[in-house]
Length: 360
Image 1 (spheres, rainbow, N blue to C red):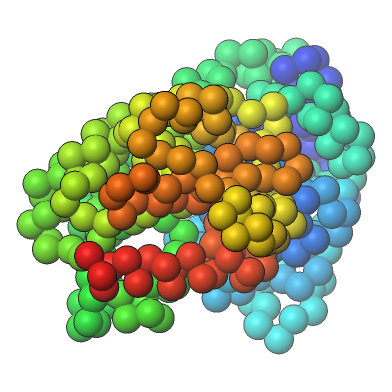
Image 2: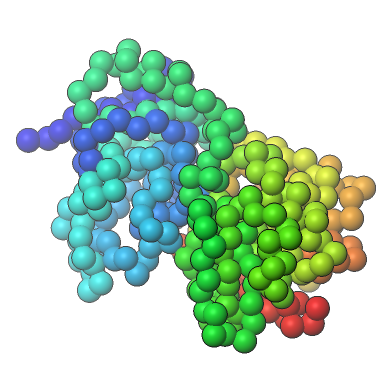
């Protein structure tokens, strides 16, 4: 017997489909991602905390679930919206199917949705507050839950996904970097470890003096969810360490570093979420296809009189994709060089991180 599910949006739209996963009701910002693969990595990406994820690719679940693909300790998205979900996956590494995966982490899913229609609606009107229900609930009550939730820019999300206490990995390795954890992905850690860089993962609100106590050779400010202007502690830490360590940032970390030097942040209409975003390096002229997942961007105009300069841009809309300090060994990128999911074209960002670490 099919289980009815509902997806309600803040403009009053209610879409009905088949429920799968856990029986519950969840609210969040409804966003879309364009990758043809990578649903496991996306669902477990801490940057999707507070959001209901919709995949534009119509078939999800066909290759199942493996913990080898996790980017955190479990699902972080609030819900999953798909056109069609496959209950009988085929992959040598698969250990369970998509419905069981969502059920395990108490996340609702809805299938049978016209995802093309919903994608066009979000592109036209912007990302919207929403609620997904796999339980019985009246339409009016579901819409009330949507209207009562806060906008994502007003929610403190980083603290819900960051580590609560220090975590040391690869202590035996030659080099050491501190990761200021705003929602770090496993692939980012692995990218450093395979280059001989051990990491100390610290909570996002760790003070600069405590960071220096670990005697790191560099600092990486990680990716993560939500509004960077709410992560004021991290921006202060970056500023305090700016003349003491090489500093790099990824996604939210890029925005935090930019804030630390006086840049402004804008909320995007529907963001960049996918694995095929073209980025041009303004110094070399090289174009790279990148993995991205963000709904905020650095305001390019606000950087004009600052010591940080934009060195990479998105070729689709011209938004900043990288910055570099004029004098200090500080740089950051808006995209995800660690991929997971996505192409590995920009993996050399971590080679640059290692090079700066050694030279400083």
